[in-house]
Length: 296
Length: 296
Image 1 (cartoon, rainbow over the protein chains, first blue to last red):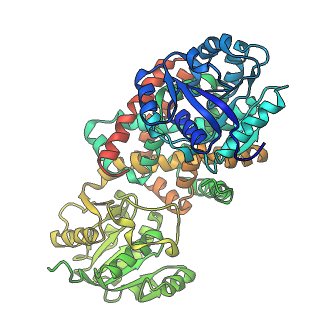
Image 2: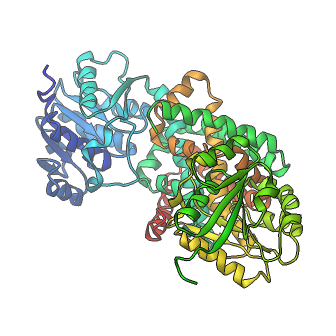
Image 3: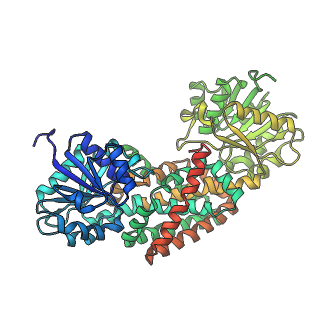
């Protein structure tokens, strides 16, 4: 297969938010798909996607979007996957590839897998990329460049389907890693889910303060707080679904975090400066690793 | 006083790290001081400050740096302030202004105040600006532009001294706010100290993971984690001293944070999606406030 020939004839997106619209743009701009269409339950989003020229056809009826698609990309919040799976299953022809862009991966195998007919290939995916903005108007084709995309094909997945989805992500500029869904969910609980939960919490704590203190918190947010507010501006429904669907891994890492925080709290209370300094020093190694890995 | 005439004849910095060296550069570049000198207990730092042309004279002997200074800027970690105060007190002439750039302010009044002779004006200050880097080589004159600087003069402080320190910060591009030291310490506990503590904790939790998981955490850090690692790369000694010297305010806001986190943990465990979504939605208002206040 030539590097410039389209990989897919017709790609149907279910859901046209930040990630869906970014990937849709990239598939068109980089010539990866001949035709890109979408379904979204919001008519407003459909109009926007058409106006912006992101897709050639947009519809609120999922079934219509599937017609003739050789790749279907689920890009709705993970909590909708069971329902979406039920709706799309009966309309998919053998040979169709179904993938997704969700932040949890065991739930995809659990909720979508059983709804797909024989001969349809489910290759779940998670592009580790994004911004704090939502909606199709905020997407952009270069979002995935230099980022990782993790694929979690189930045991016995069709090798050609895995290869084609891998090639798709490579062509939009990502590095592809293949791992088990359970392992993905554990690693991302640390690198993404816990950070979001913590950021939402601290900004929530601040928003419960008296009004005059709150306005000062906003004023002097450059001291560290504003970085948390950016993370905590992410889509609430998407994140609700992430936590509900990666419960065990999130609760496990949260427990470790709480123990570590309690230890630091105790060190502050009893004036144990050396312990604080040691902890604050060892964290620098991780930062150096991220800079060395060019993920900073 | 003309806007272009120097405000001070000779400014002596005690400590030449990121903040000290940035302010020293700004005072020279913007013509705010005729002469800038520094003392630092590290000979290496003194050499660096001279090599980089940040100061006209650098010395490891505090007393030498003070000679003829009409402004003294304390820019060492807050934990050293009592000792620094004791050392500089006997060498200061009436009319000298002493200020600082520390992240806690009650401790300055407590540790430096009693060591200064009559007629010396203590005007504590806190520029809410910085980067995750340390040392004089990482400073830059424009660090304070568009940022806030909070001054916490004690009751009965000399008005002319307050005015001159205010004007200094205005000339380096900052907006100046005057408030009580205790109030400063409460507000900054939320906007800066707690965020740093949380970031140090989560990066510490990650660095305790098994080696292979840790390398994956680094690899997939773009999902939120890397923002925390940047904050957690800040200077360990500076931050140790912040927590030891703002204990009550930090412990109080940490308690609120822990309660809020526990509530979200419970919502995840019991699958209470609406509560998660509500919390994740209300935090967006604070982000909008920060964007509107042009502090994003």
